[in-house]
Image 1: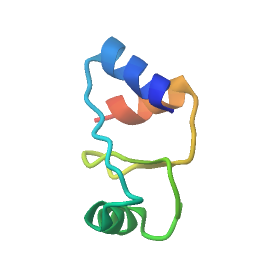
Image 2: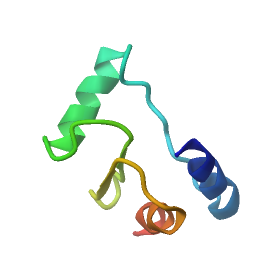
Image 3: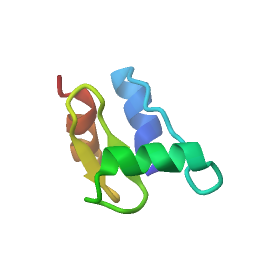
Length: 70
């Protein structure tokens, strides 16, 4: 997903915050709170503005739609 995230950041001018959850318990806890038991793994994308998420990998168009929704 990293190449798609980088492409999206370059093309759309958005910044997607990436948090390490394997070695950082605070980040893992935050992921679980946003996940609410729906996904249970990574990659996990959560849009704080819309409350929508993506579980697992996604194609570029889906990622773009998720990121740019208001």
